[in-house]
Length: 493
Ligand SMILES: Cc1cc2nc3c(=O)[nH]c(=O)nc-3n(C[C@H](O)[C@H](O)[C@H](O)COP(=O)(O)OP(=O)(O)OC[C@H]3O[C@@H](n4cnc5c(N)ncnc54)[C@H](O)[C@@H]3O)c2cc1C
Image 1 (cartoon, rainbow, N blue to C red):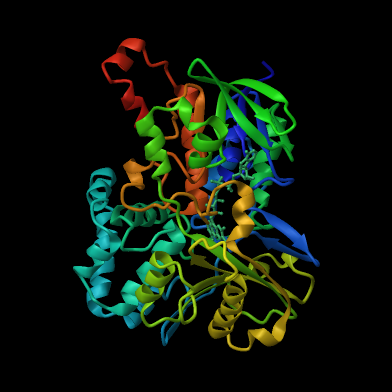
Image 2: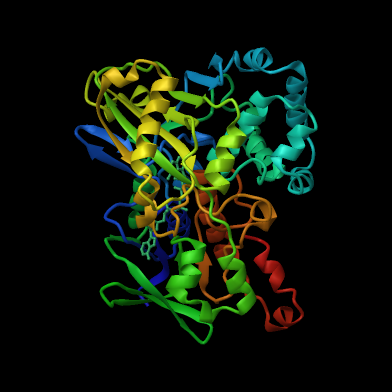
């Protein structure tokens, strides 16, 4: 056997797991169906602009799982992170410019004092034992939790929007525990005095692809191999054990361990086949809810017209009505979508030709394979103009990535993040990375207990947790399996 581990897919989850295993001395082969690594976290050149596949704001930049994954193959010094300097938050008619130092003062201006009290309660909660506290909060939705403190539409709109972009699900379906885990993840480095005085969130020099590229370089330097343009068609299972994969050209590659970054639902139903799992498990996987899809509008601007690095614009007075239409009725709602827009070339000027600017806007949306996309494209352009008046006069070109663009990465309905981090699918309720088929594991934003937080970071954390589990794994004895203790192993990652 040439490889100890075959990883299917070079998204962040696959690259992080591959790097951790290669760094620990395992011989790793990564197979990627497209011609580039990075999956949904990738960057491509167009007319002199380097544009990402999504908006991509990294929540904890060099203080979270990104740097941890890079360090596993000695690449942490090869990737540079930038922090947001200036941010604009517009909710309805209220518009505030946010700098780190003024952040809390501005919160007081924007929200009634009872809400500042709520924020203080949230921050104080960080002191409590995290697991017990967030597990309790997993029983409440963000909406229920916040409704106890306020009925302010501004606050509810903001949290509803945040739940969609952070977790792929509305705030009336998102557990409060997930938000608390995200908040504490951000606060932890601050409590240790790291990153004080600046926003932690930011961007990456060279575009988002810099990270998967560096991880893949690391895997190769540690004896591994990355093959792009290789579509895995089948995971071969014999006697209840995954023994290898078959590619689209019919090549069979055998390995002790198969890590799939191709999405948990697709792995079970298409790559392995439900017949290899028991009925309950197959049904459980089939019932997992995908998160919302997303569209992405990429603008090439004739000059650095936008001064902010990050803009949130929530134009609707009642986002819940908007999202109800979009999410439940799957319609194109009246009114403009809320958007998040970033200006990558503000942070890294090499991403646009000299004197020009790039802007990328995203919004959550239901997956709709119908012909509605030209309508959404116009709405996206209108939403950007609403957020940044006058910008339309500066557009050299734009392109609009409808959710269907992301189908190439393998998952039905192309969720922007992965499975929804909703009630029953977040925290300890996330699907385990360990599959019932021996030798088969899932990595990425679709699986992994204890991988919580935001999209790219969840994907990386899932890969790292799974790799660490495999590196330390002790065989579960048949006796333990028989008396049910073996299932405890499944709780770990
Ligand atoms: C528009 C948009 C905006 C976003 N904005 C943000 C943001 O601002 N911040 C943030 O943190 N996250 C954001 N995200 C989410 C984030 O990009 C994803 O959650 C994350 O990149 C998922 O990584 P992954 O490894 O789980 O999966 P993927 O990136 O999908 O990787 C899976 C890989 O597996 C490959 N593959 C699948 N099947 C096969 C097969 N059979 N054989 C071989 N290869 C296969 C795919 O081609 C792909 O490369 C955004 C996503 C979108 C779509």
